Each structure stands twice: as structure tokens, then as C-alpha cells.
Length: 369
Image (tube, rainbow, N blue to C red):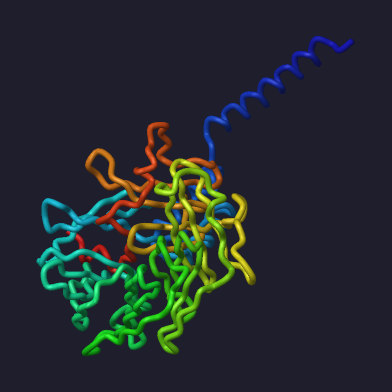
């Protein structure tokens, strides 16, 4: 049997140890912060401060290094119905800004990419490029043909920029494809047979010198090569009828990343489905396969990014709520939409017109009011 002094000493040591552990719990270290939170903090530091912070401890070093070379996320751009102001919103830092562009004569956006908007004047029917940050305008030749889809390959200031416009003649089972480039005086137009082309659902996507689009009805992937002027219907297609829900509730989006093509299906409130174009056919991606990518889709253009802090394995769309533009996202990790509300209707999941994702320039704050 232990002596009283020994028992008292043991109890005192236990109490001291318990007190020390309690005190440590009440004074957590900054090194104990979750890695996802550390990455967000580090991503907001300039390079010099990032390097200084990385010397603090191992966890800070790992977080700082992981975000030093990350892709820039796109911003939300919306067009006000009541004024000529553009609203810009940074979804990561949750900050909004306004741009006051020159009068564009009731023009509508038809496509967006590389910080540029491809716009269509409602009165004159002119097509032109517009940069909402630099306010630069670049005109395109006049065209008498209507078009259902249009896209461009690269910024209009580059030497290899080409614009492609499609016009589907469903009754005659062919499509007219018009091409031009900034500085040209006219469009070059040709007709191609398209017997299986019924309903084009995705916007055009430029990848490896070709423009791609996906259609319902024929469930087909088409592509056009502007240099050789060849129009191809690909056989490696996926039949979307595996998705549940009504015909009118399905949306399809194409996006490209590192030479690969991705096809996204959304259908009401159901879980979005993502396919990656394999060697022979579309391959359905499981919830564990996104590997950190984020797809930003809108009615004008869809983009992909990789390893954005706090936005990994997400699909991000746009919607309006309480008269404000908001970002609606689907998390593959949590298998739900965010913000999560049982009252969400399928119409709220369809990308809203007059709002899009745009790539801000490096000095974006210099242009904002």
C-alpha cells in the first residue's frame, strides 16, 4: 500500500500535468490553424510577406509555398439594367467594385474571355471587342448573317486571334460558319452539312486550334478547324439521357484545361455530372477525381482553375438574390450546393444572363472606383 506522502505527490503531479494541458488548450498556437485557412491567409500576402511568413514554422511554410504560384481566379461581372455601370465582384475576398464604361449603344455581350468582351450592338448590329478595364474598342467587319454562337481564340490584340460565328439552318440540315480576325475587312462564310445537329447547348470552346460545341438531340460533339476549314462530328459522345429530370431543366457546359476537354451537366437540384474527354469516349469523373479543380460557368463562357484556396473541387455559377449578384457553388467534397437552401428552384441553378466570369488584369484595382 502506497504511503500518504507518495499518494499526495502523485496526485499533485497529475493535477499539475492536467493544469498544464488545460492551459495549453486555452492558448493554441497559430501553427495549429487548419491548412485551408492558412492557405487563404497566405494567398492574400504579397510575395515578400509570403516569404517572411514561411520562415515561422513548418505548417506556415507549407501553406505559403503552396499558394506562391497559383492561378488567378476570375471575377464576376454584371451589367446593370438601370444604369451604365458594371459591377465587379471578387468571390474570394467578397469585395465588390464598380466600373463606369463609355456608352455602348445598348450593346449585348455575346462572348467573353481573356479580359475581353465580344459585344453586339442592338441597333447597328455591329460586332466589336471591348475591354471594360482599359475601355479599348476593336471593331470587326459588318455581317448580314445572324448567328447562334460566336467565340474567339485569343485576345484581339494578339496576331493569331480568330473569330468564329455559327448559324444553324435546321430545316436545311446545314450550318454556316463565318470567320474573321481583327483588322479584316470582311467575313469568310461557308456552309457545312450537319444532319445530326439539332440543339446546341454549350458555348463554343477553343482548344488545340479547334472550336468545340456540344449539342442535345444528336448528343454530339462538333468541332471546327479554322485554318483548314474542316467541320467534324465526333463519335466519342455521351448520351445525356442517363441524367434524371425534365428536358427543359438540363444544361451543358464545355470547358478546357491543360489540353483536355471537360463536359459538365447540371439538372435541377441534382448532383452535377462532369465528364472528361478520354482517348475513345467521354469518361465520367467520380467525386474524388476533380483533384482540386474549380469550374466557373456562365451563359457566355466557362473557365477552369486549379487549387484555388477555399474553392477546390467546386462548380461555381451566378445567380441573383435580394437584388444582389451572388456566387452559387456546388461542392463535390460536401455533395451539396452552397448556400444550401431547401427552397432553391432549378431556375436559380441556371446561369443568369447579363452576368459572367471575366479575367481581371494584374493591376485591376487601378481601374476600379
